[in-house]
Image 1 (spheres, rainbow, N blue to C red):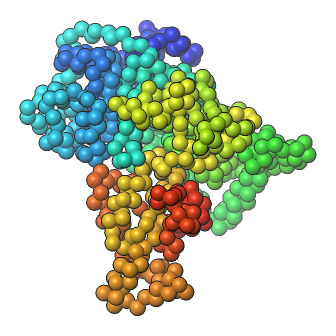
Image 2: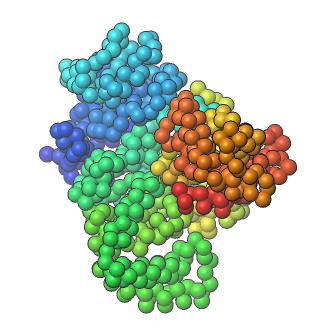
Image 3: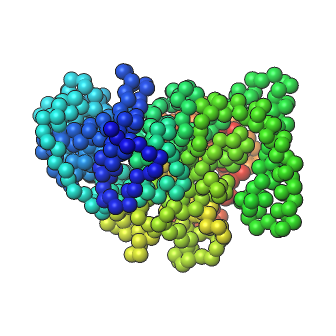
Length: 636
């Protein structure tokens, strides 16, 4: 019999991730740990079985000669087998190197080579097929398919998942002692040169997350958590480790099924990116729009009242980001407003919002948003309808969580307070001197979750982490008097889309400049669904094109903007962008430029939009064209 209590296990003294699974096996043994209802057949694995299968996978690797401190690449996507392979690799003493099986072959091969991996675990034969022609032997000595297909590779030993597990069943597991500063994984992040960098994350980095996230949420054994983000992402990975350390039931879903799974699985928790919450919001809005005219009018009245209520409630509690220092009079007035509006808000909750919550299963204790900025109207909406939404912040290099909002102090619009043992410092971006409270500057982070550095890239590591251990996030922000971090923009070029994908603009811009019709281009799209672009056309080439196509276009200053909005001109640039972006090595669907605007004024040092070395000043251009950028995405 295994003991099951609601008291969290004490992980304060453990030194490695594998120690978690033996503890949960004895604590929550018969509770379902991993649940994949969409596999054929469906899979359910208890905590006791999970620990046994992790050790069996590790034993199989040991039997194949995988030794401690070697690197094993894991190119696969969400499934119980992914988790077993992840922790089985680490339990064998190796460090794994993770990436999606859907990634471009060139990127996977670069990671495989750069990481010095000696073994490769892949999703299936399809993944192996796009890599096998370029897999080097040596160093790759072993390939493992997480499927049970017939392997298709010559010259290198290949085992299926079942074959490896069978090998593991014939041998005794040899425990490997790991310390918290031993390397657990390499997660490759985008680089400004287009070459990804391997963030070295240790056992201690992730163990800090397992311990510290309990300061934000306190799930109970057997609580359901719906899993949709890529398991290899630092964000989802830390969340899974934490939730499983608490005895939760991790239910795998996918984009096609998750709205139905919300209703049927009735999860208690869900971790996601802004785009996910936007899609749920869009679905709810569509349902509301399908109501009768009378009901739509009633709902609109209720929503207006509820927005006034939450605004007053925030001011009363000192949690309005636009009024963080309300006077006594303002608090009193807000208290009176909240008092009179609350009964109407409660009525709206019973008539409308309660029904809306049922579409999400009705059991959500919290949804956690990270990986990008959450739009204000989305944040407000979830508060209105009564779905507890917390926002966190962090980066791959910080394992990833550094800050999170709390139930008892949920300052909408902020990234929340630092989690335990984490320090935050705001400095001048140029001088790196500390700034005063509520001054905007560059965000630096120090704590046990900060990576060990970039693999084999000491110069990049030195640039990212200073001698005192402060990590440069590349983000701009400020800290409130209650220690909430408020992010205002980015000091570095990386664009983070609302689905959490990181895009380095320079390589894509360089590709687009191959078009004879594009003179200058700057990508935009921070926290948007897709990339956008501001484009200065090559007017000489455009004039020649219009003449060749017998188009009577007026390029005089008076009519230039109208000419650039001409449908045939717009079509030309759409075709140019699509072709050049898709032809770029390493193209991913998220690289597509969804919206663009042709502008008439070139970027130059004279108008302040370029440096003296002719680099575009992205913050200056963004500020100059902010209204155009906003309009672009509204139309898009």
